[in-house]
Length: 198
Image (cartoon, rainbow, N blue to C red):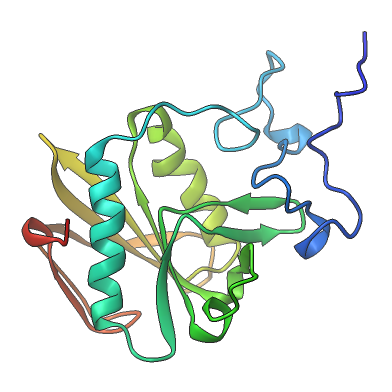
């Protein structure tokens, strides 16, 4: 049996950047990515998520604030803004480092992948598989050069930093950072993970 609501998550022609409706930030996945039991895979449809932990909120705010204190003038860290990864795929990273020109447009609802230098995901219990596997694959396929994944042990953060590999097929680990995160790219950054802004 079909319903008039069966296709309500499909993109509308001209409905937003890349033909994706800006009314919805996540779309039904392509058929190849749906599970055999008919349910959509994680990170693909409008799948409700569990409540956000204070740790998740604190990491998102703290990393965005710490990045903005150190970024060169042509970049801005933003949180919870959509990134258009393809004509029918969006993601909403916890933090993104985007070109200042794109970030200065307050009417934007999303950024193009080529405007994004770094995406950060704070791993949530209800989205752990997606944060660790699916999303990084999508970010790499879209050509986003840097990815950080924030994990925790007893709510103490540690960060895996990744860089797009030479052939652009995926990410390679550049470090695992406990207490202090120090990287040279996308620009020199040092963040005290134990003293993030709260």
